[in-house]
Length: 210
Length: 210
Image (cartoon, rainbow over the protein chains, first blue to last red):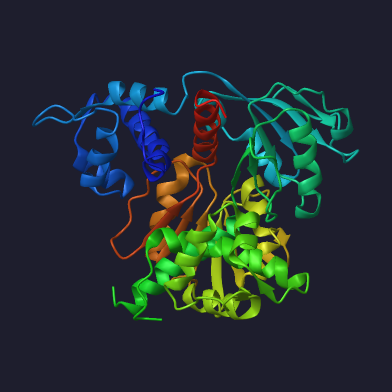
């Protein structure tokens, strides 16, 4: 896939398409039209067709797209066809919810390590993975992704530790802007940002008289 | 703000700017340059300047942007200057983590209702809010936002109930594409999608030899 140049907004929609296709496949549906996909995900049919055309998918004239084939294509582009391992730091409510999230395994991700520093948590097991003390983090860790679900005040220290252990991708659930070396990718998930964006669309619609 | 037309990708970056400005303000910083903002959030300085120019902010020549002033502007555009209430359904680990998330109050949101159907949870209190049985949901609810943190299999039923009680905005943490009337806004947060997007950027960088 090295030579395929796909715009970033398209990349960000591919997991949604993948999930919808996966739901359709589970229902035994083999062919789907762009307008059906559009109905299921709220992205315009024309946008969907454009998105998948970037990697040479144009569907079958008058019929639609082959569900399995399109899933394989997206899976290859998103590198979902190999296993990716995760080290999660901070096994509080959010961390434990993440660790137990059924989708993780389904998408080919695997939690390899859980870390915390609370004596109430260290030693406990979640889905067969023992919670280790963060001070015992192996170096290197040999995982693809570090997930940070600690309180914001501890986030930078944890990020430093993960980077020090060779982690090149971090999913950050705290409200801190992490400082990391240039070769480390960070993605922030902030629940309040999602609320704020939702509020904007809600209020905007009211103003425009929807 | 009715007449200001701001592109959607800009809107989606505004909460991040707002948060960074808020962190700067707490540190007593009054003026910030676009390159400092860029360093803190990973968005290009030119993109930041373009984003804020949509609502008439151009900074002070050679100095930068006034932190408080910019926060007020963003707050007004995002409708964050009034209180928005939330009804959350599904007080499992993720739901409870959300309900206890300190950022919610800080951003002017307020949890008004918590619903569940498990007898182990109904009647318990979180931050002074009693968990009610979902069958006792008032109609109308008079809240701005419904948050769905139930298992995927129950999500559509909960969405129907919320819509039926007059909710016009839903934050959906399940992997289901909710079917809602046209006047209801839905925003999906799927943890696996975030992992997939992160993996893409990680692997892509490796391939390109970063």
